[in-house]
Image 1 (cartoon, rainbow, N blue to C red):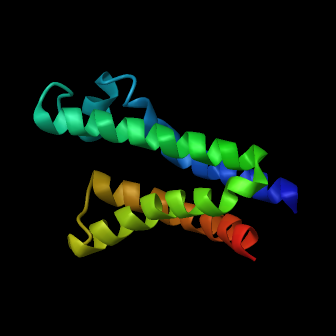
Image 2 (spheres, rainbow, N blue to C red; image 1 turned 180 degrees about the vertical axis):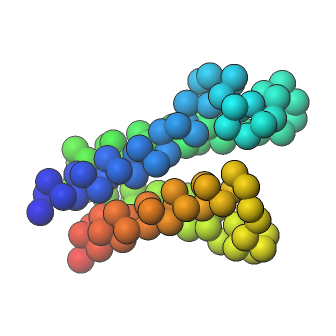
Length: 120
């Protein structure tokens, strides 16, 4: 069972990894979001990438430290469900945001698994 938990945490890392890279490679902001990294929105998206990196680090830590998994599941859950709620409130727009929503929906299953295991 521990192996499946670690795989689920790793899956959550993968979901957040590409956006996390935009925090360190601002050129990705334009590729991922069609926004220049130089403007106000671009700077916010670079910062968003750094926050995604924090989520990746949190999930990685949870792989190796079971005592951190409750907090890690909350942090990752806020990220995943926060976006899905915002996306839904915006009326489920098409385009790139829909792709992000689909990826986050895929992440709900491993998130539920690690959360259940952490909080049982």
